Length: 304
Image 1: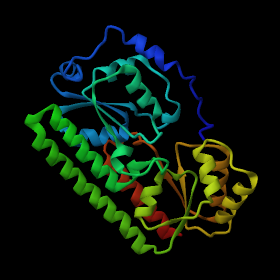
Image 2: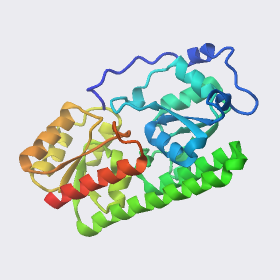
Image 3: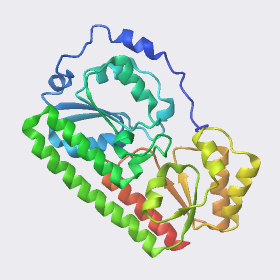
Image 4: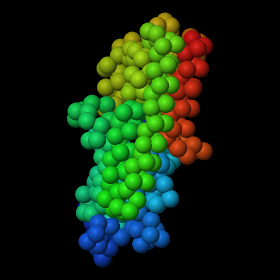
């Protein structure tokens, strides 16, 4: 639930198809390469996956992420004819899937783009209905990097080995992130947390932390509805009663309820760790972003 934001009225996706009249793709699966000075054009739904694509593609790609602003909500991203035109001419489309960035899958369908596609949730192997925030899952990020390398290699065979090497280099750094997370679990065995939204679910699991947030609270937040008064009280008591070491707060989801949990944490002396759904301003890479968040988490646990 994102009540702090103004939710745009979505235009008809069908209208985007009309807007693309005369802007057809070439038979090779995209016109973006020529438009970008010979580089492979990549359109990503968010700057998270855009940063992964950039790390794999290096100087051979031109990456555009449709959501860069940390205040933008992928669940409420408006239809945009200019973005549709860009996607129609792209060589590769990279998105999260799993119901997270439906605006992007609608664009793919509306434009009829011939761009190769990487759906991170499908690549993850998780079953439909499981937590969709797979960019917080180190093994999935490695799989997506490999998949992007494969797709880029199919577009430009001469650079196939370079893309594979870049993916391997990124994967090695992601392994370091996973090791950093595992160390948190070793340093703070049995630590429990409450999360305002299950965004960092996979990373908390990798860190060996136990998320004791009442399931009904998490389900309501994920469905963008208000949890019942009783469920909110139950969640708040976990914090005010100091039954958890940390409150993990999605900084991009601000509601009266999440604010009340942060207030309860402040009163109880429980550290609040801020996590985000996209790369914050000033952070350019996935590895830097995750490393900083894990450093913050480790520091908070050390104070609890």
